[in-house]
Length: 228
Ligand code: DC
Image (cartoon, rainbow, N blue to C red; front, side, top):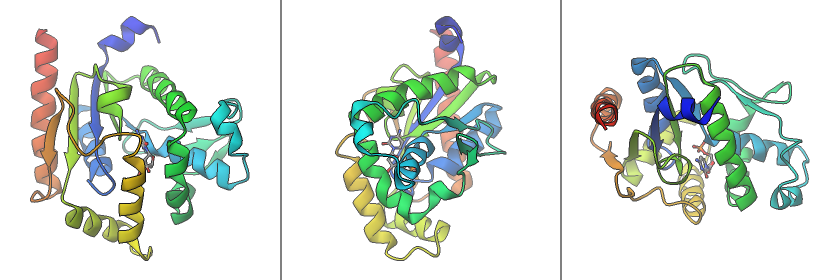
């Protein structure tokens, strides 16, 4: 896709910590607006999965992983899959081993700059008029120029309760989530909204209410961007 074409695509950037609900909310927004959906955490998880499969971690620092990491991801909110080469890793990347390993992979700066390029490439090839992209640094680093930028948070208590429901078999969820957030926040700030980024706190909102509040912000932002 040409740069000019990408500029006209509507980008909805959503950041937030683990358990903020951003994946389910982002998918729902994508459906409501008939946009594509991109989970950028899945790419970090897929790379961490590759490392756990035996890929030499030292090659991450040098950027030598790029040719070995054949990453593909769906941008359809209703048919989500992730592939590395011809292997479907949609389920595998959600394992607790991958969750444990992913932060250290995400801290490598060559990995972060690759992920930024990859996100632009995937968003550029999405055929929908817009795309909802969720992660930790989308509003600040990957798409600071996005038409709509939202940071979705919730209190730690509520986030942990939501995560525990999602991953009922994982013990020690509290330690895992707080450790990962602390580790991730060394390289990206996803706890405070950057200038121009709307903060939505979903602590006292249920799923439908959160989607409604976010959709209102997105509508207002996209309208304002059109009038610019
Ligand atoms: O959203 P998630 O839990 O699937 O993300 C997995 C990891 O990837 C998370 O520990 C932080 C990292 N990540 C990141 O650093 N930047 C992003 N844009 C998305 C995810």
